[in-house]
Image (cartoon, rainbow, N blue to C red; front, side, top):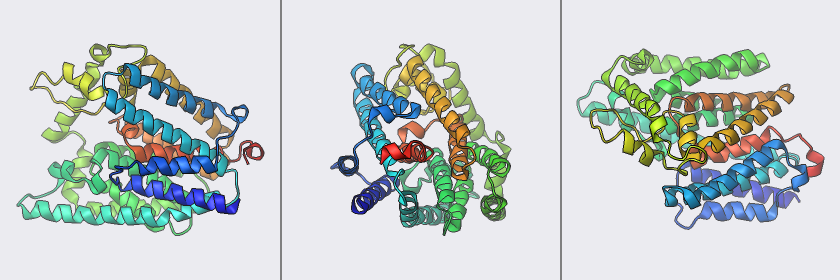
Length: 385
């Protein structure tokens, strides 16, 4: 039993590492690893499923159905495969977390790959900044979109960092360095949405998470990272906090507002949407024909993305999932780990309201499935073993 448990944890850590570093998976190794885990740890009987379990399963079925009517078939198939893999991971973790020592093995085992990734991203920023300054420019703010740590675009990377920040707080031991690097990465993204989300995250953390020592564990590294960023990069920090002072910021805001206002004209399949990954094609037909208007291929927020790609049915499914998660968190609010995960989920939702990248990032959906299983780890544990 212990050997099987350890084997599954190792395979999941390998999968997490491959997704984190965005390794080109030509042979679908991540899928094979998850399938191996599922063979060793089959899902529990449906009679023991929670409301979250059922909703996750229905969302996966809905994603599979999207392949048959979506306007972008190949991307829809890719998202459907990712959705099936995430559901398998969720099922595996629902049973695995019911076993003793699983969380320690999983979280402690992730320290090295996560730490290595954060360190690479942190160092690569200074290499990027040096290149920009060498080219004769005064600061890096207007070129931040060229900075792609580990291949992630800025908005996606900042969301990844929020999840890794919460993940690091769950580790407890030896996690202070990971917390500092995650916070530094968020600040060095110079993303307005990330700065707003970080401020709200810190406020909720201080008000809701206990004990006091855990409050300081996030507050102190955050203040240190903010001080270093403000002193070393004053122009970029001031510009980011200005929110709408530069032409590029105003253009970015205008592009999102244009996409938002065009939503009612973009939605052609109101009830079921146009299929996964169809947003860029849908919005291009309406907005991008006018070259005088600002344009972005990413949805201005996750609600608009779900409405266009999955329709009202998709909105209701995800709204149901959010309600069931909130109920689960409320029932287990005395558990500090559940509060930590709740903070992560809330801040991701807030960040997604500034630009939607979550559903298109395999790593984020992978980690979120693990965290959703984690907040239910003590529910009916005797029936899951």
